[in-house]
Length: 310
Image (cartoon, rainbow, N blue to C red; front, top):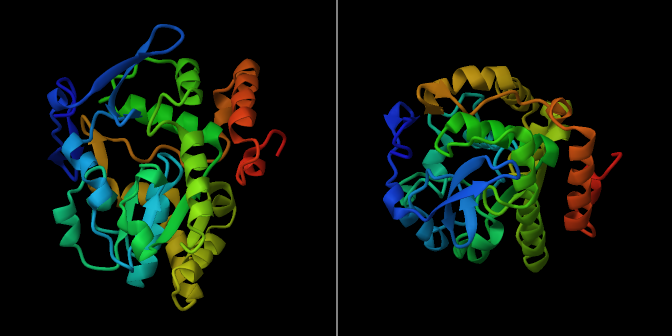
C-alpha cells in the first residue's frame, strides 16, 4: 500500500503501491518539518503512483475524439471532469466511477484502450510530458486556471488529508516549498509556463481555458461554453441541469462512493470556494508569494489573471 501506516482506498478498494520501487525523497521546509514524495524524471509527485504506470504515459494510445485534460492538482479537476462527461453523455447524471479510471498516473495503456469513446483523459502531468499521440491526433484540450494562492491552500490540505505524503509541515512551511516548485509536477508556475509554450508550438490544437473563479460566479455560462467547445448542440436546459448537479455540495454527496479515501475519510472534496487563501496568508507570506509570482510569470499570457491588485 502507499504507506505502511495508512490505508488509501479508491471506490472502496485498497490502492497498493510498492514504495520499494519508487525514488522516495524527503523534503524539509524552512522549519525542519518534512514531507515525502516520489521523484520521477526530476519532479516531485505523491508517493501513490506506480513508476511502471508513469513510465508508459508517453506511449499511451490516443484517439482523435479524446478530450485531453492536463489539469494541475486542486484547480477544479473533478468539477470540470464531471461537466465534460455529463455533456458528452447528454445527461445530468453523476459519473458512476472515480475519475482516476481515466487518469494517466493510475491506469495502464491496456486498461485505457478498453474504454469506449469519447474519453475525457485527465492527468496532472505537464503538457511536455503528454502522450506523443496528443499532437498527432490533435486532441481537443481543456486547461484549468485557478488563483495559485487558493491552489496552495487546497494542495496543502490534500497532502495532509491523503496521509501518504506524511506531511508534517505547517501551511507556512508548505507555501515556501510550493513557491520553490518542490510539490506536484514541479509546481504550478512551471506547469502553466510549460503549457503556454506547448500552445504556442501547437496552435492547431484546440484548447478551452476553464477559469475557476469565473465559473464559480456563473456556473451555467461555464457549462455552456464548455458545451460549445466540445462541438455539441447547445441545450440550455441540459446545461442548467449540469450546472446544478455539479454544485460542490451535490458533487461531494454524489461522488462519495467513487472518491479517494484515506483511512475511510473522503479527501477529494474540501471547500470548493474562492478566496480561502485569506485565512492562511500573513502579510509577509503574501509579499513573498508575489515576489515569486512576478518573477516566474512576468510576460506570461496568464500573468494578468492573478496579478497583484486584480
